[in-house]
Image 1 (spheres, rainbow, N blue to C red):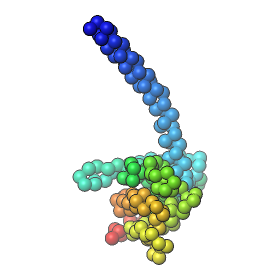
Image 2 (image 1 turned 90 degrees about the vertical axis):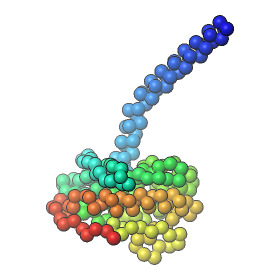
Image 3 (image 1 turned 180 degrees about the horizontal axis):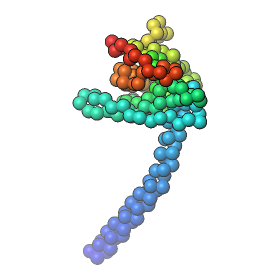
Image 4 (image 1 turned 90 degrees about the horizontal axis):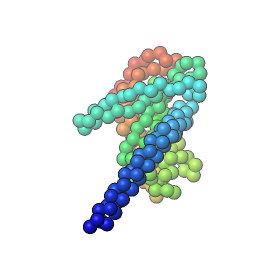
Length: 212
């Protein structure tokens, strides 16, 4: 019995030591993780808003909306050119993916009427298939959204698109393609109408009519 008690205390002590070590490691790496996340976001914003002045940090604000009775917050970055005029907007959004959530950034023109580009910054989609949503190398899927109008929802097709709002799915990764499209369509429907309406010279303009 005494041996059992002695061994139990040893196991407990080892558990406490390992827990402390794990907590210490997590604290030590937390700053690095946040730094890497911030760097990835900055690179994504620069990619989807090409005219962004690299020397000017985008202005971060939050857009709130009600979705099924819950408050949803989205990070919105106001991006400026070197001359101080508006280069465009970058909206961080996330949604369900095939394996886990997908996080992406949508770049928009100053008046919110045109998509400047999209960039997936975090996902756990299937390597070699679904993860092609991340980049254009090897597949043009992300680039299909560039210069598209925001006035209508996108539709996923498996064949060559025949209308401007159609996007061709990645072969073998239709679900991942659809999940990205769902996030983009959600941004267009919920958040684009809430953006401050500004032209290229930052003058206020009238808000566009509501999307159908």
